Length: 335
Image 1 (tube, rainbow, N blue to C red):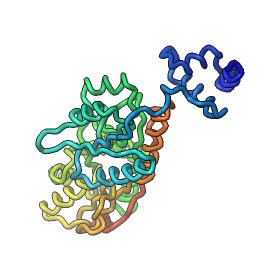
Image 2 (cartoon, helix red, strand yellow):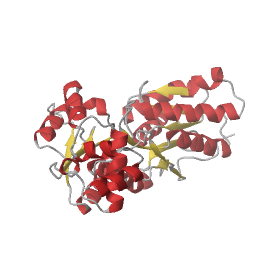
Image 3 (spheres, rainbow, N blue to C red):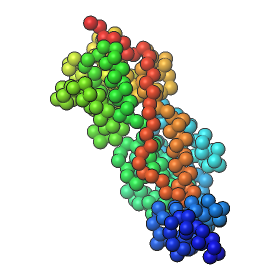
Image 4 (cartoon, rainbow, N blue to C red):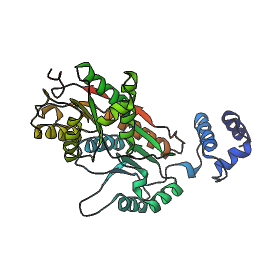
């Protein structure tokens, strides 16, 4: 026993007393230090303490805001397949029209001693204040995918929204648009804020002052109606092409432009975000930034399993670059 303590302590860079505390399940050990000791135990093939093994139910909650946005079911499908391969059972949790909220689902998951929770396009804060407190106290493994709000201290996976916005704006500029608009979600929505930062960087690199391009930015609710409503003001500013924060917003922008008697894309070009199912068969087929859903789901499940195995993970978001899929909704503007 003493020899084992010595080897583990030396490898982990801690004292034998600290190793003993970890083995005995003492709470007086910092999470990072505990993780170092557990890793050392794994390296030497020693058995972990019982408290650090998986004792939770093999249920994993998949919390999404709704199933109307096609990208959410795509993430759910990708996550569920990977969880099943690891013997875990996905439980779909989404808001319903009759008032069932995220906090209600969290209560049910906590009652089952769930193994972990993945929030997709939602927020850790959506769990509710009391539920969030219990999740923290229990140390429930949590991963956020494209979180709507700032959530420090939680593992996160996200699309590189800033890169996507810069790339989309650059595409529109390359085909001849000079006044390029941006339609994003409500103020405070983190992915939208990142897209705005990328859009701002694009104009800064071109030497266009903020007071000029800021008039070409519109905040809207994530829906087709929100996208359509944003278009008239942008047209008044002379915008001929627009980058949208979701495919639903983009389809709404197409509708809004047509309501103004414009042809899409000849008079008004539109870029979306997500590359949702069926965007290839819309009229016109939508140019959009494709999220790498499969790769992001793989990363999210890996982060979840790492936590379930008792390891500490970094809370710095893992960013994935999107791919701009150019289709028929963007062309050179009429001269």
